[in-house]
Length: 477
Ligand SMILES: [Zn+2]
Image (cartoon, rainbow, N blue to C red; front, top):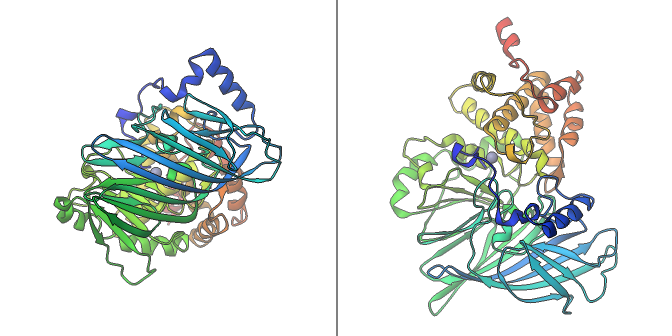
């Protein structure tokens, strides 16, 4: 995600799906989940670390007019180290039609966005099991401290942008970033609409007045990164300069095509540059969607990025965001964070990718952009620690700027050769995996000739703003 606008960083809203703190019963639930080893410290009600999912198969039917969604999920999962007497899937306030565990009817409750399932027989430790859920209703965004997230009904279609906790607005999931799974998503909707999801379009079948689109995302994907757009889009292929060969498609309202053609013209060059700097593009293809509506910020999904009409102006006014969202395919999507405390790893590297694109495409250098970011941060409160910014500040602009500056400080400390080797190795070693700040610090140390502990302490673990990196070196040259 690009940094949120001021409109989204207001006081924390009391979300419908954060009801755990508003009732005694909910509070007990929250405490119980927090006690489960590995629960996300920022969103303890999302995700269940007692099992993991390796594949979701979702068959959905969506009618845009009445905004009606019905779905069947087949979820292949594996129990953790302890036998499972119960487990939780996150799913918003839909009508539940049927739940099965390995074909048998379990006991279940569905409250506060949590589908708590107690199988007829406990599942053995480490055993594979299959859950089927049927649900239906009118999907709507999940309330969160950052505004509505997830499924959003548009004037003529729908859009899903879930970061960080919007996925349960449309399908049942183990909603934690570390639980990455493959997905097959089949969506049936009136034939006038196009359906865009991340991954490969396997089939598109029209029957009577509806069309069924089947997408396969074989790369392990965090639940929040399953993106979707349903609308009246024109599809264009972005010309590949023949370097890298990653298929790139765009889905845009026809009337925005002239502006789009200029604004996104250099995305194939970005793709080429980032493959040089970060290593091979981690997925089979890349798609962008521009919606008819305005979006506060563009949002990344797996193999897909979603932009608003306001990000297209025919003057490349949002080109840095085109670079930012593309860079998330490496940092955030392929290399994912183990829990939300580590969000700076996603956003700091995506921010730095903006600066690298600027530097390599004839714009301001990373040093100049770092200096501007440093000037800005020096005028703002210094009470945010990158390593654990707190839930309310996880999308604070300061985290993005300081994240970029921290990466710049590493580049200055390591030198370009070691720095880019370090970045490529990071993306390569942890492809499809999950990481933490501690893992990043040890990784960086392997490429440094001098210790980087002090750099990490000052930039990542403490709040005060260290001096601008690289300034002395430049002055001395
Ligand atoms: Zn971002």
